[in-house]
Amino acid sequence: MAGEAFLKSIEINFQQAIKLLDELGYDIGLDQGLVNQILAANSTYLVRFGVRLRGEMHTFTGYRSVHSEHFEPVKGGIRYASNVNQNEVEALAALMSFKCALVEVPFGGSKGGLIIDPKDWTTDEMERITRRFTQELAKRDLIHPSQNVPAPDVGTGEREMAWMADEYRRLHPAELNAWACVTGKPVSKGGISGRTEATGRGVQYALQAFFDHPMDVKKARLSPGLSGKRIIIQGLGNVGYYAALFLSTEDKALITHVLERDGSIINKDGINILALKEHLIKFGTVKGFDGFVSEGIDLLEAEADILIPAAMELVITAKNARMIKAPLIIEAANGPVSAEADDILNEMGTIIIPDLYANAGGVTVSYFEWIKNLSRIRFGRMQRRAEETRISALIEGIIALTGSDFPEHLAKKAIQGGKEIDLVRSGLEDTMRNAYEVISKTWNSDKRIKDLRTAAMMVAIKRIAQSYSSMGI
Ligand code: GLU
Image: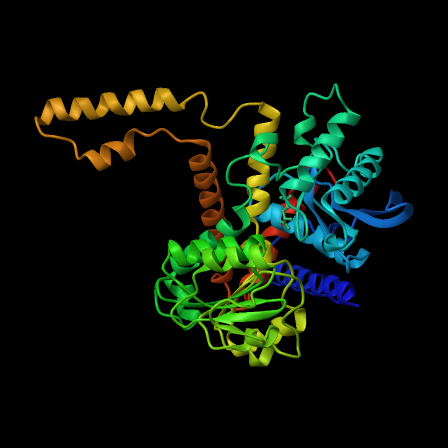
């Protein structure tokens, strides 16, 4: 079962990192008991609930797994998909713990899922199902501003988060922090600017950070700079779409392949991502768009500089790993490369920027949203005008002293105080760059640390172990 293999892959990565921490003489107080405690999910709740729809009772199965509570609330998305299962949810919850530790977001890891194909139900029905699921989770504090804060994932988005927040508020009308019970809400319902695109934006920042490390770029046998790099994107959902859009329009990379469920688009001069997304939304398929071919997943093996799997787990396994030609893979999805494939790709010299770092942009901005909800004020609201007045005075002073004009385009840029979106972007960029710095430094510190995944895992485990020991465990 795919979920089992996914969980196994994470265990293997984890054990490798533990072994290396030990071999390299890091004393982080990890006895076997603590190792087991960090690895295993603390609890997984399974719920079956009925909803009366279309004149009959339908039973749905959902999960919420809590991996690690060294920080609370615990955090992680809820996915809606027909193949959701306990192992998958536990694997994803574990990844959340490592992810949060890596980007220094003070949350434990959690993840949820509902076995459902959203395409089978109308919007009204989805709302009723989501509200019932929320009631079940709320009963056990598995949705709670200070204990467990869900977010969007595959198959869910702003809409589901708005329903969940509203249902939670209905159940707890006097709870002052109720809005903070989920993140990824629409801006008009307590969300934050920039959360929707945050994971894709984070992938862009991760790639920029990678290309700012010449030694690492050399290891991938790539020339410097993102501009002109040929990219394959697998999956044009929320994460894949924004990553592809920003990389092509802002970094001038060429998205040569987009792989979707019902075929792919190929264009060696670069696909117009905005137009493709519009087509996909309008017709529900990539068919009919310029450059359409019926091949799908096989095109992961196409010639390119960078491969971005941005859909589901385990798309690169022992079966196809040897055929992957791109020398650099960045895991925008969670768990797209199996542990076996990871070994094969490592042997081939392929560099992988791992999921626990690459897609951490989502939870980073979720953290900003949660803080915004608790403080009940939009970021930048207090200081924006004051900043603008101060910089204007400074510019006037320079003009008075020098007697020359201050270039208008620079003045405009300097005077404008940070809006919420600017602050979110700056916070996200800083987080992604800092985290890459630490991972790359660890990777390059010893030859025995064979890849970025092991390095990232080592950093995450060290931090989690530290917080356990500071709790006296
Ligand atoms: N589902 C996203 C992830 O896998 C976001 C989690 C969150 O924002 O809590 O990282």
